[in-house]
Length: 101
Image (cartoon, rainbow, N blue to C red; front, side, top):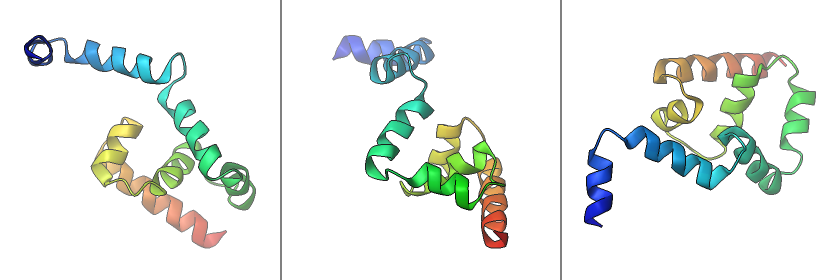
């Protein structure tokens, strides 16, 4: 445990996180792995979303899917690799397009 604590406190955190992501997801990126889980939980979600709301771009679809997991704005931003401000914009654009559609 001490070895792990020392490793985490070093400048190698990014390497550890990358190794962890590779271990968990294999060769897939995290979004592909998430979609596999989503497809198992909600089998027709992505197809229905694309059909019903064709104007949503990829980031807006990702934001919609992540909303099923009740993530905080910060967690969603971390997952998407963006800022909380951008998550707010994505959510707003998504809602507007879905209300129009």
